[in-house]
Length: 169
Length: 323
Image (cartoon, rainbow over all chains, first blue to last red; front, side):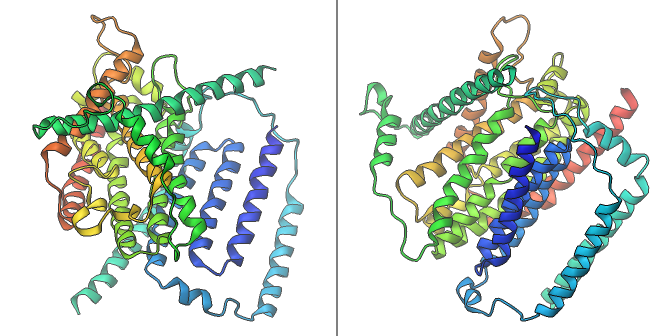
């Protein structure tokens, strides 16, 4: 059962990402990216990481993509659609794709694929990983967590300073 | 076979909940019209049925048979998808809401987080509708809506952390159980104030109904919508009002649990509390004027944000000292 759901989500993800990169209209591309996030959240749920799935939807779909759409909407889409869509950088893309493919192949060679985890059908609540995540995040990984917070804070202050300079002028 | 049974039961529950929600929404609109009318010394709908009781059905039929107009220059696909994108998240959230001790569609251990995540998607429909309509009023209305909903979503998210720290669980049913003795509103008055204001802003209700300020924007993001598509926006607005009221009841007012000395079933308690919440929403609409856009943003970021941060700090501090 789980494997069918996995193929559904993974297939949907590949399809929407392909559609996304081939659209000329940026808004359509952005909306398709949101769909991709949904399928990814589905994969996370199947992997038993429901907290991550909710974060994926709340932050990426509900937060970041809305801000993207927000700024794209102010653009003149009709002009953008008529612009040249491809940058004629086929050679670069080919080299990058081959390198990436080799890398993935090398990594996959290291992984041992076990039998898929048995999926227990249940509509009820199961013991969750939210508590475990919280405990690990605030004990074992406290330092990386704080470093990430400081990075985010620094980038936020930077953005405010840049924006303020233009307002003052 | 067990699985098929469980799926069938869930499907029946979903069918019941979705239909009851739509009926309740239709009558919420009727109640709103009546309450506001009486607040303004009018009678409100009186013609269709006894005291206008069949008015919602007449309105629904009218919307159903209206011509469905899609503007010429609109982006057809996005234009048609936008109302769906508003309504679906509003209804999906009902999957995890606890209506009583035994009646709910499902319980998941990230319940509250799921509600926040899914209801944050409603803003997509608004943005899509505004953009796809290809009309200036719609676009401006959508931009306003999006900015307002995004800002207040943050306060909403932070205001639920206080009760969460007390309950120690994201499961809505467990949060209700944690309030068997004392409602969290007595422990978390600050959080409740912020939650309530943010809830008003999230659902675009007075005094924060800027997205549909008629005098400035005609009807905001749904200016170009008619017929059933318009009805979808309406349905979604009231459905998400009920969702946010339910979350408020679950987090601060003990959910479906009532005091022991009045033996009423949990579902009745839930309905009573929901009714009280919705009445306050309508009452505010009859009472308050609309905020200005800069006032809205100032109240949010300069007053509510520090307040909710203080609340989280105080909750953690007091919990560490006394529990």
